[in-house]
Length: 312
Image (cartoon, rainbow, N blue to C red; front, side):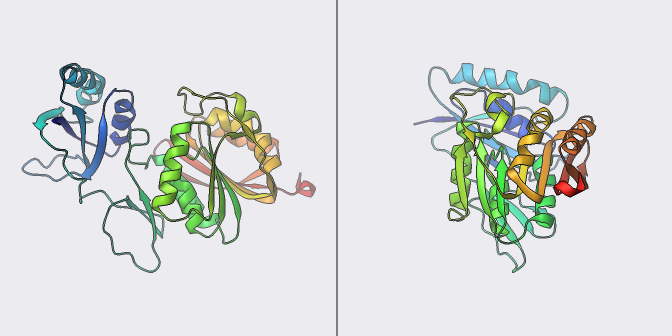
């Protein structure tokens, strides 16, 4: 079977935007994200993306639709022009996939990447996907920095809005037990695959659902739900990591409190500085104090502690 191979170069800022847009296209397969390899042009590109559509009667219309979808990013200088080529077989996944070092110990790399780690490093293997892109949105990186500092061995933790599963793997590799929840079936499948790729199945349980009021809020990332969301009863937790929209954090503040032990830890992320005061106020109203912030541009992640009742 022949394929149309499509490729473009993009920035660190835009790589996940490209993937999100491509996820809306029909027939796109086998995304590969590699480090940009400059030839003569010393441009500021960071990544090269390559993906495929079947070569059939609909291929031209599919390519035109993808080009139209990505044109705003090209016009604003965030990608190169989309290139196409007719190929007989798909190229193997790149061995030049990006490697990201986050915090003091985490190394995030593709699930097939060859890498010799040092004894102190913690490898987080993640397959690039149309649904989750590189998996390294700024909110994810900020969450990882905080988790590295606050997760301790033997903790009972919840990853709410688990998405690609990268935070669940990080928590598990810091020797905690994890319940990974998402209200999107695609995210649940992606997390299960990531858990398997990282060999932490014994430490992570993955379910489709939400805490308390989250089951009635619709898709956390403004997508479309394909099934009814179950309410999951989680209690006596030592830590919750939630990388979801700011408005969802605000609604779930009491549910976070009810799920955590006294002095339990909450990592909130997925929102920008304009929502920061509302999120902090909502958490303080139900008994949390702020321990510290992590920031990257307009994005912020916050570590909170649930005060014991005597401290309210």
